[in-house]
Length: 203
Ligand code: SIN
Ligand code: MN
Image 1 (cartoon, helix red, strand yellow):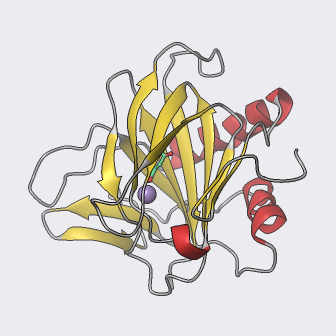
Image 2: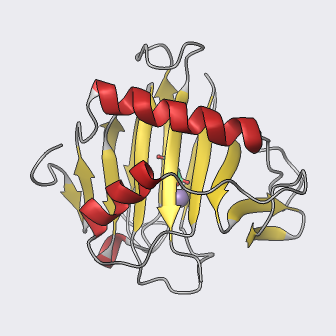
């Protein structure tokens, strides 16, 4: 754990090395439990193409996408409720986001070798004042962040296993995405790749 953020772009704070190796492995065990109950799947974009990132969720809501658009849904596509968000993950939220309400969705993104995520805003939540917190595990990823307009200047930063990022204030609605991962740069996940957890208040 570190005392303060060591990257700040328009209010987007990155806490490099927030989780040590032991904490990363503990989090990985929690994620294995989540994925065993709510398996990863490839959502379809609203225009019908499978996303390169595989996803699942924990919490009251899971993030979902298909031809009907981006939205939160109360159950996994297999019909079961999403697993609860583990307390250890909630603790990270409260450590870095203070007295914000509990997160209602923990989206789990899995990036294989060629996966990436285009520039987008997180704006499917009802109240866009609450921060977005994201945790990186496994291979390094090139994260790009800009402003609230798609053509605003962007900055890039490599996110490594154990880094935690918070988008609040002016950065809450900033365009952001993952250009690529550096496959094989981390030994944390046996089969390689990157996991990202995104915590959000939905209602
Ligand atoms: C996202 O914006 O949903 C994911 C970002 C990341 O993988 O770091
Ligand atoms: Mn996002």
